[in-house]
Amino acid sequence: MNSRTFLQALLAHETEHKQLFHEAHRLSNIQSKDNTVFQTLYNEILSNADGYLNKPIEALTFTLFNLFRTQGTRAEFELAYFDRRRRLAALVIAALRDESNTYISALEDTIWAMCDEFTWCLPAHLNIHDAALEGEEDKHIDLFAAETAHALSETCHLLGDRLGCQVVNRVRQEVLRRVITPYMSVKRAFWWETCDINWAAVCAGSVGMAAIYLLKDSKALLPILTRVIDAMDCFLVGFTDEGACLEGLVYWNYGFGYYMYFSELLKQRTGGKLDLLQSSEKVHRIALFPQRCFLHGNQVANFSDCSRVGGVQPGIFSRLSEQFADIRIASLDYLAQSIDNCGRLAVALRNVAWLNEPLLRERIGLQQGTDFLPEAQWLIARHQAGDQEVSFAAKGGHNDEPHNHNDIGNFIWLVNGVRWIDDLGAGLYTRAYFGTERYSILCNSSLGHNVPIVNGQSQREGRAYAGQVLEISSTETEDRYKLNIAKAYEVPGLQRLEREFVLDKQKGKLTLTDTFAFVAPGAAVTERFITLIKPELVCDGEIRLEAAGKSQLLRYEASKLMASITTERHLDHGGYAENVFLIDLTAFEVGEGTSFTVTLEEGG
Image (cartoon, rainbow, N blue to C red; front, side, top):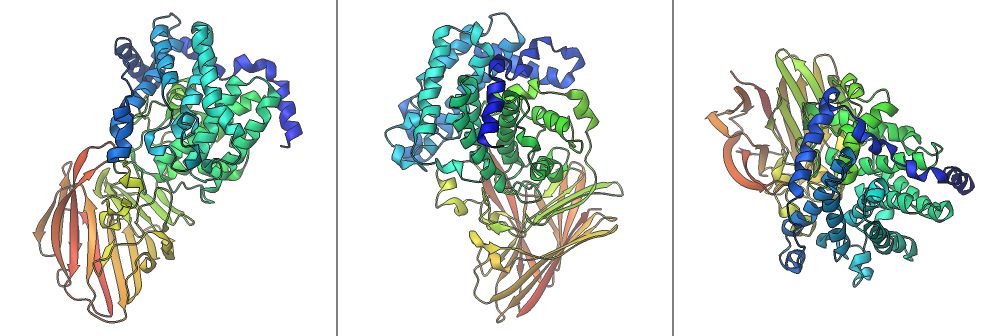
C-alpha cells in the first residue's frame, strides 16, 4: 500500500477513533457461566486485582536500580518493576468487567507511580545498544519502555472517561515525551528497527499502538506507522521460510503476539484496508509454528532460550483461528498465566477480550506424524507406538541463532508425556547470561545438551559452527534423520562426525548412532545425555530411568563405553534451582574410524 492510499484509509476512519479495540468494552457483558476458560482467567485476575487494592506500591529505589551495574543481577529490581505492571493489568481488566469505581482509585495511583519512574527501561537494557542516549535514560526505548507506553495509552483509551483528567493528561504527556517524540526525532534508527528478532515487533508494535491511541490526526500518524511497518517487515525476516521461530515458542508468543496486536489495531484504524496477518503466505506459515513444536500436552521442543512447557494463550489462538482454518491447539487444559510474570496488559487483556472458546474447542488436537523444518533443520515427531505416546525432537542449525545455545545435534525424548532425555531451556537471565560468560553457563553450553564431547572440547559458538543434513526419511515404520555435526566443533584431526537418529514407530524405540573419523587414533570421546530424572546404573550396558510409574532403559555398548553419572545444579529462567543429571558414556578406545550406538526404549 503506497503512502497516499494509506493516508486515505486513515483519514476515512479518523472519526471512529473511540471504537478502537471495541472488543475490550464487551467484558462487562460476557456470561462467564457459559465460558469456562473466561471464568478461569477472570477469577485469577480478579483475585489479583482485589489483592492490589490494599497492597502498597513498592518503591523502585536507586539501590535496586543499581544492582545490575554493581553485581549483574536483574531479579531484584525487576520483581518490583513488573509487579507494578501486573497491578496495572489486573486493575484495568477488573475495572472493564466491573463498571463501578471499585478499582479506579487504585488504578490511578498505579498509573501515577509508573509516570513517576526515572525510566521505563530495565537497567539491563539501558545504553547497551544506544550509548549515545546516556544521560537521557527516560527517553531510551527498550522492550519495556515501549510496552509501558502502549499499556498506559491503551488504559486511558479504554477507561479515560472514568479516570481523573490529570491522570489521563499526564499519561499523554509522558508517553509522548519518553517514547513517541524520541522515536520520531532521533536522527538514526534504533537498533531494533532493523533487527529480525522479537525486539522489532514488540518495540515497534508497542510504539505504533501507543501512537494510534494518542494521535487522532492521520497526517501526524502516517509517518510513525510507516516506520513501524518497516520494522515489522524486518521482524518477519527472522523466521525461516517454513515459518519456524529459532528463538522458540516463548519468543514466538512474545514477538508474533505483538505483531498480531499491532496488526489488529491497525486493521481497525484503517477500516480493514490494511491487514498484516493476511499480507503474505509466510505470515500464515508463522502462525502454524506452535502446532508444529508441541510434543505432548503442554510439553514443547524447547530449543534455545525456551521453556520446557508452554500454555496456550487463548487470545492469540482465538484470533488466529478466526483468520486461518488450519490452526490447531494442543489442549485447553494448559492455559498460559492470566497475567504473565512481566504483567503485559496487551497479552492479559486480549486473552479475555479476544477469547472465542467455542472455536478453540473445535480446534483442539494435534495430528500425529513427523514434521521436518528444512531451513531450521528441526525434526519433530509424535507417534502412537502400541500403548506408548512417543515424542521426539532433534535439531541441526548453527550456533549463532537468536537466543543461541550451542546445541547442534541435540535431541529431546518423551514417552507418555515424560521428558526422559531433556533440554534445559532458558536459564536465569543475568548480565553474565548475555555477556562473554554466556557459554560457561551449563544450559547454554553444549556441555548442557545431548551431544558428544570430543577431546574434552565442547561445541563452539558462531555462525560457522553448523550442522549439515545428510538424510531425512519417514516411512510408516520408522523415521530416520542423519546429520554431519563435525563443523560444530573446533577439534584438530576431527574429519567427520555423523549423528543418525532412527525412530522405530512400532516399538517406540530410539536408536542413536554417532560415527567419528579422525586423522589418527587416540582421540577422547564422551557421549553426554541430560535428564532431570535420577538415573540408575543397572549393569554394564544399561541405565534405567523411572518416573510416573514408567521406566526407560538407555542401553549402550559396554565393550566400547564406560558409564558415569554426575549431578549439576541449574538455575532455571525463574531462578529456581534444579538437579540436572549428566550421563556420560566415555569411550575406552577411539580409532581413526569409530562408531557408538545407544538406544532408548521402554523398560521392563
